[in-house]
Amino acid sequence: MGAPYVSKRRLVDNSMSAMLSAIEIFNKPRISYRDEVTVVLVVNAYELLLKATLRHAGKNVFYKKERGAPYLTLSLDDCIKRMHNAKLWGTLDGKAVAANILTLAEYRNRAIHLYNSSDLATLIYYLMQQSVINYKDLLLQSFGKDISSEMTWQLLPLGASPPPEDVSFLSPTPKRPAVQEAQDFIDHLRERVENIEKQGGDPGRIATVYDVHMQSVKKYGSRDLLVGVDQESDGRIVFKDRASRDTHPYTMKQMLDRANALRGETLRPLTSYDYQAMCWKRELRNDPHFYWKHKNQPTPLWSQRAVDWFAKLDDTQIASVRDEYQHRSQ
Image 1 (cartoon, rainbow, N blue to C red):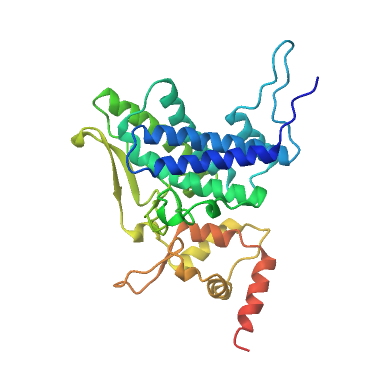
Image 2 (tube, helix red, strand yellow):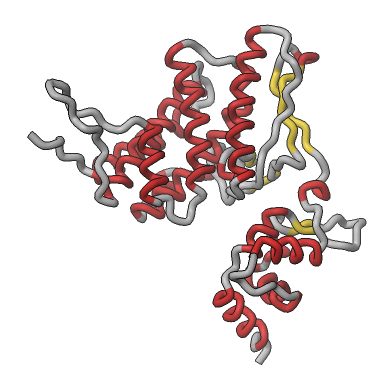
């Protein structure tokens, strides 16, 4: 007897229902156990979506059947591994998205089998916000469905636009068990973020902060966000941000030099004309993720994200934009 038939359409529909339920529950004005229930549903939504994506690509979502035992579907971890192996993340940074999912899954497991520290609420909120964005992008990319059309985004704290850069953490020595539990969770998250950074990925896919108007109000990076357990405030999670000139440390020349160093020998070096053309075409100076200029500082500055973006431009794309830029006023 073969494996049971699995409908990818029903997987997608159930996945969307789980995510919409998570968002609805989180936005209730008064509810206890809010974070735990929401995270359980968010992780469930992802597990169903990943299985639907694997099925859509013709991949098996069952383990090899053992004699006398029922068929078992893949665990979340194995779904993620097969997504990596089959390269099914598309344009998303799969490793960073996976880090977000696995961090929330760790929180879910703690909630199901024991309990979580209430000190983690703020950090979980940031993780879930980015998780909704990652989910929306993966669903749209894989199945052409836009979950934002199913809700009123103006009332939704758990959603927004593009993510920030990266996250880093402080780890002062905790002094009580509840704080240690929170610190352990932060340590695991820090390790995941650092691994993504080392691999040149997009740590902004892991966690972010948005206001209720769905506009990014702050991008948190390893140069501008410190997170830790504050011993002076009874073990609460605290956030401390630095100035934007720390997150955007490069002049135009420094940014191009670093980008060219990353381009290697397969791509031609970028010139200042390439820079001007791409800024014009993509309106990069209007993107705070890339560009920052203090009102009292004459020199504009660029972020590491800008370095990485310019480094990945292919020569054909640059040539096309250069041509448009050259004939823009004709």
